[in-house]
Length: 146
Length: 196
Image 1 (cartoon, rainbow over the protein chains, first blue to last red):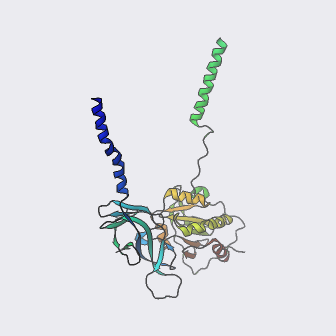
Image 2 (tube, rainbow over the protein chains, first blue to last red):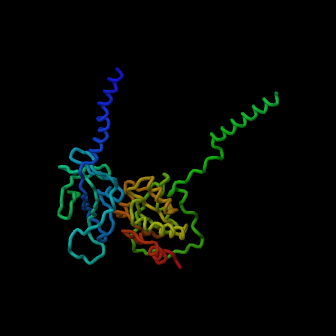
Image 3 (cartoon, helix red, strand yellow):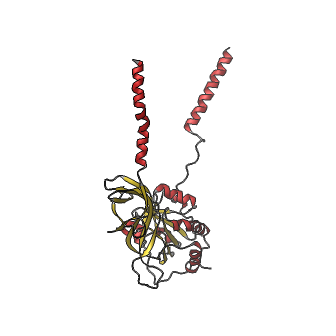
């Protein structure tokens, strides 16, 4: 009787050993390095190329703001804190003044698994759809307001 | 025998007293750390020898704002500029430019203590991060918590950093969107408000 019980244990042992490995397999889903780029079109007067944060309705876009990249089902693929934004000119015309109308652009390096859809959530606000754009290297991009 | 029993009772009583003293914390607990940026750092009396330049008459009045300091105390800016110049510094703990300039501004505020009042205005911030910032950069002046950006909007400040200089009496002298370093601000204080 006792020998029979041990035989059951021996049968189950490979499964017990494999269980944690199956868990590891999920973590080892292939991931691709890319950049999440968000252009916050807040039209604020700043010098070009300086650190910035979102203004007006977008003040929650700022250095150290919590972000998540989620897939279409809402599963988190990457998370962290935003870096500071960088001001970019709204149009090419040279106004010959140091402070010009600018947007604030954020670029966040992430490593994410392949999915059909990606969305960005900043500060637990409404998800922002991200679009794949590899024209300047692998990237997921968004413009707010879209 | 009786003496030995008495000694044991006294010993136990002393032990109980010691434990009780530890529990009540009489004299053992450290003083609570005051909240940085609160009412404790409001300015003292105006120095008798404070000499100021007259404010221009053709400039607008600064918006009078009221708000709450980091410790919950109320503050009305107009009460401060009733008897001396005021510098409003708009900042956030996550703002790198603010961090780079804060030590210089803190030192400048100390050097003009009671003569020119610095008031920080913290927007879009977290209380713990804000306190850490204020302690780390030795901010020893009052700080308004501008959670709803009401003060920032009153001064058309859209993002930190920004600095505003208000003359005694409330004339809006100068604003620096994007902020200003301590050396420039010091020279402007001497040029615009402090008489030589």
